[in-house]
Structure formats: C-alpha cells, structure tokens
Image (cartoon, rainbow, N blue to C red; front, top):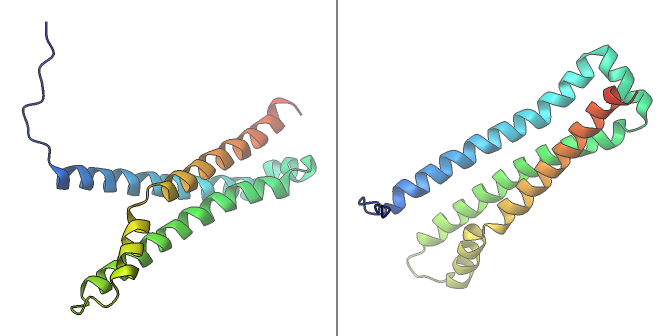
Length: 138
C-alpha cells in the first residue's frame, strides 16, 4: 500500500517554535546535568573521597564545568546576536547593512550549536564514564 502524504501544509512558524522549545529543553537538561553530577559528587563524602583519590578530580571538574560554561556562553552569544539584529533592523537609514548581514549570518549558523552541544555531550559522557569507572574498577 502506498504511503499517504502528509496533507497538512508545512508551517514554518510552527516548525521554528517546536525547534526552539526542543532546544530550550535540551539546554536546560544539559546545564542541570552538568551542575547536578558535580554537586552530587561534592556533597557525598564517600563519592568525593573516591574521586579525589583517583587523580582524575581536576579532569572530571573541567569536563563538567566546560560543558556548562559553553552552554551558558552560547545563550549569551544568541542573545547578543538577536539584540544586535533587532537594533540594526530599526536603523531606517540602513547605514549598517554589512554589520546586519554579518550578524544575521552568524545568528542563522547552526554550527555553533552543533559544536557546543557536541562538546557538552562528549565532555559529560567522558566525565560520567570516569566517575562510574571508579566504582566498577576500584
């Protein structure tokens, strides 16, 4: 049987809203995990002692904090570019057209999110592996 095509017209605004909501949810989870696991490690004396004794405490700290820092930096980056684009759109004389085009291009570039999210997932995975492996291979 032939597959039925979606009869609903493609809705750009709805798609963008779903993408924005998903992005916001993912970023919230990434920041929460990046803060939550280190807090758990620091507040449980037994876990903190094992991590300190492993010699990997600084690396584990770096992995989680770098993920959180990049996520927060990316939020500021998006915020500043959005503000700059909005301000330049209000320029009736269009005297900053090149600057607007540059800001618009950066704002639309998805590679920044891919790099930041990619590093965050890599860093959290590595950090989590290091913590768990301390208990699997004491």
